[in-house]
Length: 109
Image 1 (cartoon, rainbow, N blue to C red):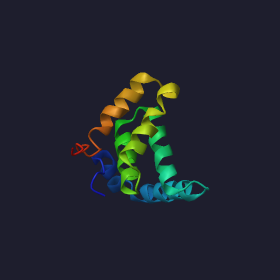
Image 2: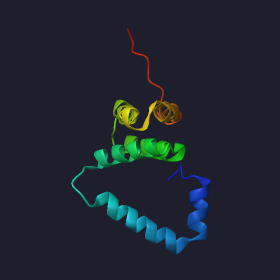
Image 3: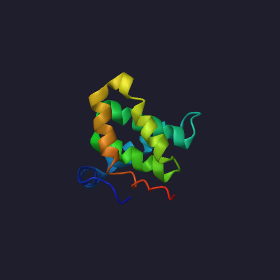
Image 4: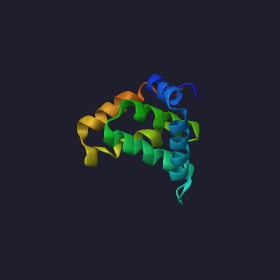
């Protein structure tokens, strides 16, 4: 995974057994339920917006895009947080998305 942050890499190196256990737990939580992969990724993105966590927003946006979510779906997942978590957190998350989303191509006339 090319976008692993340095603090996470240090955690894995310094605490390999805890890291393995955490990864297994996270996988179990992710897969235990009726939601499909794309929906799970978008939900996790929304949670990251609520936490106002730049790293998590970027990570979950990348993951959602990698499994087939469209740019518009990712933006919508972030926008949905506005009435729950607030304007400032949502605007911050939309700005962080700019670093993750490929530039939109201009439509040819």
